[in-house]
Length: 241
Image (tube, rainbow, N blue to C red; front, side):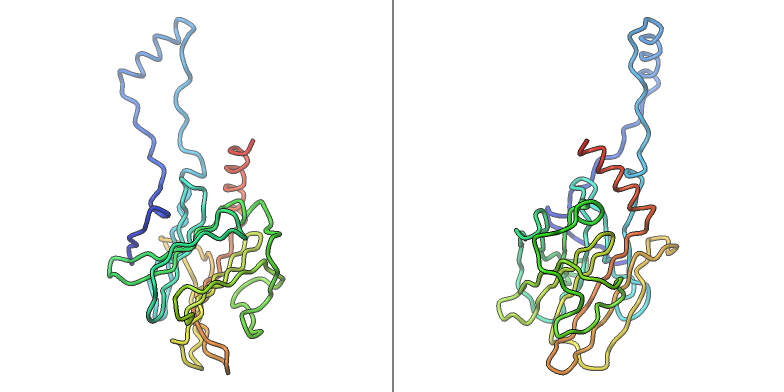
């Protein structure tokens, strides 16, 4: 599986829980007997144990990592290859507070678009600061996304404007489209995105072909399972409350 070498945007992951030495347990027991003891440390929460690292399963981009969870920053991370030439960039998206878009390199020095989206925008707070869209540019359907209108934003990611990235952020569903003239007509392929064990499908990766004057590109659809949404919502509620 392709390893990603990320910037500071993606590097923060919480430290694991430290083990408790026998001597410290003895000290706690002694204190408890005197009525002044502290409770033992809690084990990992469901959120701490959550691993959402996911990969394309099949097709030309087989085993490409496209999804991860940034626990330290409470953010969802989405990765898409950048077809053709690109310019390094690091963008904050003021229209969606907390959203960041940057470039990263994988272990083979291939460029990726990395999108960081606060988890609260996916499971708690509906985005209300953007116009909505239900299609790709040019009116093509959003690949493998639930029907409906999504708050949407398009940004150029290189000087020539050949590469653009479009975000579609809904409740428990996120789409990212990297538009590019690199893809010809009649090359439309969809592959599932699966967790590391290959036991769960968390979305789909689609090669979108060119259609008339509309450029093709790569589309990533992330569909949050209900049980994972509940774990994340409970975690965020604990932080906020």
